[in-house]
Length: 271
Image 1 (tube, rainbow, N blue to C red):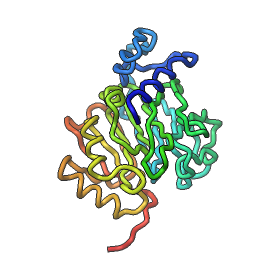
Image 2 (image 1 turned 90 degrees about the vertical axis):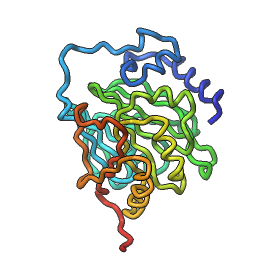
Image 3 (image 1 turned 90 degrees about the horizontal axis):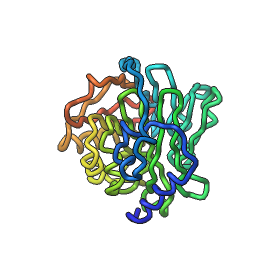
């Protein structure tokens, strides 16, 4: 996306009716970029949350459950591997492909937060769902999609900042990179077919350098193995036995590590 186009979209965000949301912890650069000051700073209580109760559950492809310390649940990019009937407080959708927008699988009368419109334009989100604050920034999918829109979602819960890149198909712009400098956990597509290739995936990781990177958007076990083999030349790769990660500030690595989660429903092509 061109620099001028991105700035115009971000400016458009703040022309929307304002909501009281938290942006300062995860997105101080976005606050400074828009010169909004205190109006975007979250007021925090003195009591710290029990971060040991925070976790991410991967459902396969790009679908995750984000679970806060107070049991707030956000389902991200639900696909057809998401168990029908799962309850959540909110659902976020990064793009309108059917493998990312199966919102009907989620029950509990969740708030549906779509990052783009059906006309492939960015739909700005700035809101709080209980104790999870959700914002998004615009991006694009790969060239094979003809410039279709994509939305990067950022979630703040407690003192943790998570980013889900959806189907990003480009390196981060300077503005996007600034906004994402305090990300603790970043979920990035690694299929290397319709999105970024392995080398560009590493470049995006280099741009953000989050403590934890979680590969997503693959359904064949071998694809995850190929990326892990490539990535270990650049970063520490840790293969987890399950598809869930319990989060706390204490467990965050001092430098970037790639956590390859066990795929709950992956297809194996054999040896």
